[in-house]
Amino acid sequence: MLFGVILCLLFVGSASSGGGGTTEPENYSINLETRLRSMLFNGYEPLQRPSENIQVNISLNLITVNNLEIKDQKLSTSGFFQMQWTDSRLEWNSTYGNIRFMFSTETYVWTPKIAIENSVNDLEVFSDENSLIRLISTGKALWTPGGVFETSCDADVTYYPLDTQECSITLTTWAYTSNEITLGFLNTSFMLDNYQENGEWELVGTSSSRESAQRSKEESYTYDRLRFTMKLKRRPLYHILNTIFPVILMSCLIVFVFKLPPESGERVGMSLTVLLAYAVYLTLIADNIPRTSTSASILSSYLTIILMLSTLSVVFTIVVLDIYFNHADDETPPSWLQNLTRHFLVKVTCWKGVTCCSKPKVSPGGDGEILTLNEITEKSETKDKWALDDERSKVAEGVGIKFFSWKEVALILDRFFMHTFIFLVASSTVICMIILSSA
Image (cartoon, rainbow, N blue to C red):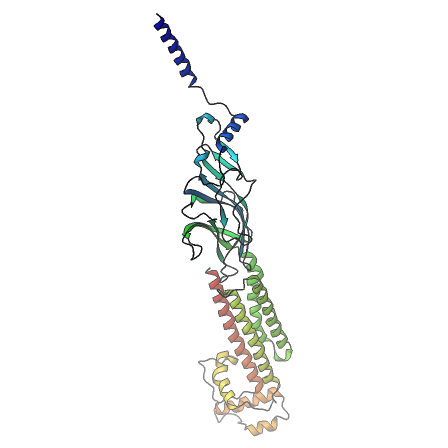
C-alpha cells in the first residue's frame, strides 16, 4: 500500500511539471530586453570577427545625384549603403521569442571596416556611433550608414555638352583581406525607390561589379572591391540654347562679311568683331571642361576651326580692299590674274550669269565699231571709271576675250570667298552636329 501511494505522488509531480513546459514565452518588457542584452553582450568582443571568413552583402540606396563637376571630375551623390552580415554570437532562442529584433551601435557590435576607395575628400572607413544596427534573432545584422559621397569620376568630354558619363562609387575592405571578409551584393545592388531626379543630369542606367585585386606589388594578399556604376546623361536644353545655338549663329556672320560693299568701310571692323566673339566663346567653354589631353571636345574643335576661318576672313577682306582701292582705274591687272579670273573665278562664282559650262561670246568682226586700247585710253579722260570698264569689255568682245579691271577682280574675289566660306562653315557645322547628335 505504501508503494502505491509513492507511485501516485510521482505521477502527480510529473504531470504538473509537463504542464509547465508548455507555457507561452514571456511578453516583451524592458526587463526582458535588458536580460537579453546582458546575455548577448556578456563577454562579447566588438573587435573580434564573428568567424574566420565572414560574408558581407551590400547594396546602395541612391537618393539623388547632387552634382557632377566635369572640370574638377568629381561626382557628388546622397544615399546610404545597406550592409548585412551574420554574427552567430548575437543569436537568441525562443525564450525571448517576443523580441524578434533590437538595436545597437558599432560601439558594442562588430562592424566591417569598409571605405570608399575613390573618395576625393578623405579616405576613411564608415564609422558613425549614432547610426543604429538592427540585430535579428537569427544572428543577422543590418547596418545602413549614409551621407553625401564625393568621388572621383574620369569624365570624357568628347561629346560635351551632349555627353554621357559613367561614374562609380568603389567600396573596399580596410585591413581585412579577401580571406577574412568577402564582399558581395544583396539581391538588388541599386535601390532607386527614393531616387529624386537631378536638373542637369539624367540617370539612364546602373550596374555593379565585384573584383579582388592586390593594392601593391609588394603585397601577396588580395582585397575585395565593389563598384556601383551610374550612367548619367546631360540634359541638353540649357546648353543648346546658351552654347550651341549662339555659336552656329555667329558662324553665319563670317559669310556675310564678304557681302558688305567695299565702300561701306565696316568690313574689317565686322570681321574683327566676329573673331573676338569666337575667342570669348572658346574661353568660356575651355573653363567648363577639364584640362586634360586624353580626349578633345568636338565643340572645342569646331570653335577652333571657325576661329581659324574667321581669322582667314580678316586676311582675305584686307586683300580684297587693297585690290579695290590701291590701284588706278586705268591700270590693267597682269595676264596671269586675268586668266585666273576669266577661266576659274568667273565660272565658279557665276559672275554675271557665266557658268562653268558657258562659252565666251565672240562678236562678229564686221558689225559695229571696233576700238583699240589706245582709243579707249584717249577716251578715258572724259569717261568715268565705270564707262572705262565698259569700253574695255567691248574690245574684249571684239576679239573674243574679256578683260577685267582691278575693281571687277576685287568684286569677283569677294563672291568667290563668300561661296568658299559658305561651303566651309556649312560643312563644318553639319559634321560637328552629326557627331554630337550621334552621342
